[in-house]
Amino acid sequence: MKKILFILAAFCCILVSCDKNEWGNGDPSLANVYYVGFQQWSTKFDNSIQYNVNRGDTVSAPVQFYSEQVCPYDVVTYYYVAGSLVRGTDYQIVDENGTVLSPDVNGAFSLIWAKAIKGIKKIYVKALNSKVGSFTLLTFNPNATVPISPNDVSTTTNNKTDEYEVRAFTQNYKVTINIK
Image (cartoon, rainbow, N blue to C red; front, side):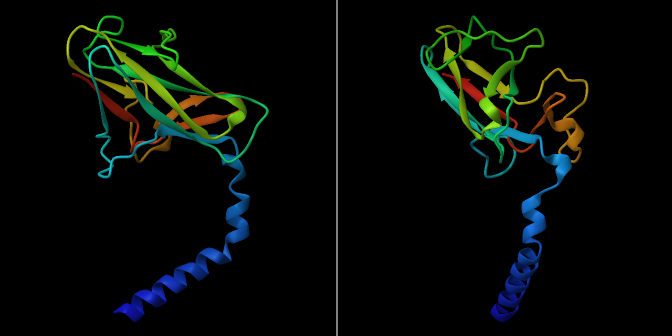
């Protein structure tokens, strides 16, 4: 059995190495397609990541931007908040200095990735001294008319412009914030 597994592993390595140049060149139609998602992945791939924060404290949720190039433009990604807790009463979305951030007219908060350089940024949530409960941070608009489908890449668009498209992962598109 070990010999069979070894032969299969060696065969797979040979197949991968044969396409090395083609793989490195990539698909030109995906040259300006990027990906965004929360950095921590659930081991069950069920979007079950949770962050706990005490009232009066701040918690951060890291977001990772995937890119393999530097571009002359900046890329904007969006994140949203959903749930029954009230922003401004129960919690605030703030920057690293504690300055309160406001969403745009569509309810989206933005992260800007200078020159499309890959990296990690944090979303900061300050729990206010009101009630306890939970809400969700998402890389998809919770009010979108098209439901999220892991099998349909057209539903995973986070942002699309004439220069680029950002797709959100369906396996880590949300995290839950629990205010204690």
